Every structure is written in structure tokens, then in C-alpha cells.
Length: 345
Image (cartoon, rainbow, N blue to C red; front, side, top):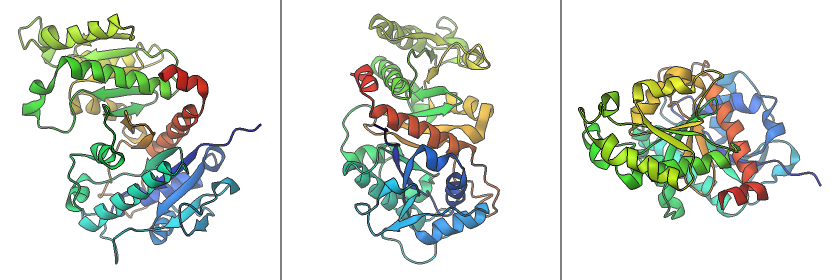
């Protein structure tokens, strides 16, 4: 029996940015339709505009609702939807209207997953200021997803570049608050989460490194004791439970261990947002992916933002959304394979 393709719900992201153009380019890629069945939840005019900006044209079918969308016919299916927004969208600026459109289309994508209509969600770049202008109360979209689905387990935003994963113990908080938020449980949880997601993405034997917090890894306590008192013991506790992890390593050298064909690790657990983000974006800004980690369904997006500075100019680079699409397909497929599920048990 032929196994069906992964089914992905896709939204266009903030209409003020490059999201619609990126989706237009993704749909035009010859490998897209072959790899997955796509449910597009978007304003039809924005989808058409995205294709026009991309200079491509991809046929699609329309459905009146997500329940009526037949994804088995080999073409993307569009549910023409813009939520509570009305009128023309603002361009190249943050707006409450753009944020509301993003939240409403994402909410419908989550509904499609709850109904068993899709396996994963892929969204084009959002703008956090727009989301907050629209009334989002959480710090970021990851915790908005948590709130929307009523999830109670641990979560973490992961970034992925060319098969290298990073996670972080703290994320969207002020730097002055970072050290106080580095805890034994936070570090071990970060290790456990990324190990689980690596398995779900198809990495059979993950190898994980952990960063220290302080310059020179604390230099034996000269510049802080977090490595000695918290991070090191957490790594040892995780190793004692059989997790394949090493560290802590100095943050200014650990990324040298994961470049080139002799990569020593598949993932790095960092202590704060930019500790990993700067390195990853320097290594491949237009290929990076963000995974909303720990959730019961794969939700992915490009790691870059809405790029208001080039929005509407037809020159957005689709590398990251293509990479996110490919990883979403692998993760969605793995969820349906008994061997993958048993590995996560």
C-alpha cells in the first residue's frame, strides 16, 4: 500500500513583509507538490500578490472550509480566509491588522490539526510587534501556541541550520535576568527536549553539546560559578540517565566543533537567545529554520524575520522556507511511523 504524503497547513505570515512572496516561491518549487499535500489558509488576494512578486504562477484549488478541503488531488488547496481583518493591509510596517491576520490564520491552522486534517504547520515570517499590537499577551508565538492548544509540557524554540540544531535555556527575556533563570532543571529540560526533537526529525543517534554561560566558561569560577554549580552538574545528571550529552563548553569555541564534515555534535544547548542565534545566522542566515519545540505537533518557520526593508521588491530569498518545508515533511512523516513513535516513548 502506498503511504500518503505528509499534509501541511501553511499560512503566509505578516502581509507587510516577505511572507507571501516566499510562499509563492515555495509553491513554484518542483519538489513541493511531490513532497506534501498543502492546505493554504490565506487571503486569496495576498496569495496572488505573493505569486506576482515572486514572478511565478502555481495552480491551486479552492475550498469553502478546511473540512471541505480535499488535499489528495495533487494541487495545493486554498481556504480563502483573512479572519477579523478588513480593508487593505499595511505594507513594510508593523500593524495591528497584520498581527491579527497572522493570529487568525494560525488559529485556523491549529483547528485543522485538531480535526486531523493536517500533520504539521508551516508559517512564513511573523512580526512580534504586530502580534502584540493585535493583542497577543504572550512574549512570543511559541507560548501563544502553548496557550491556544492548552499544552502543559515543557517547550523551547529550536533553530536548525543544515542539520545542526540549537536550543536555549532562556529565550525572550532581558539580559539582566538571564543568570537568575539558569537552573539545573532548566538545563536538563533543554537537553531532554532537543534530544526528543532530534529523534523526531530522523537523527537516530543524536550528539548534544552544552554551552557555558560566562566568558571562558567561567574560567574555573573566576568569572561566575554557573558552570560549576548548575550547568556542569545538570549535564552529568543527564548523562547518568543515558542522554548523549557533553559540556559545558565555552560559547566562543563550541561552534567550531560543529562546522564542516567532521561535525562532532548534532545539537548545541545554549544559555540565552543570542548565544546561539548570532553564530547560526552568521553561518547561514537565509537557510535557518525555527522549530516550535516540545509541542505535540511540528510547527516550523524560517528563522529570519519579515524583512520590511525588502518587502514588495520581489527579491526575497526562499532558502529558509524551502528548508523549513523539507524538515516539516520529515517530522510529519516520522510522527506516522511506529518506529519513530516507539523511539520517543
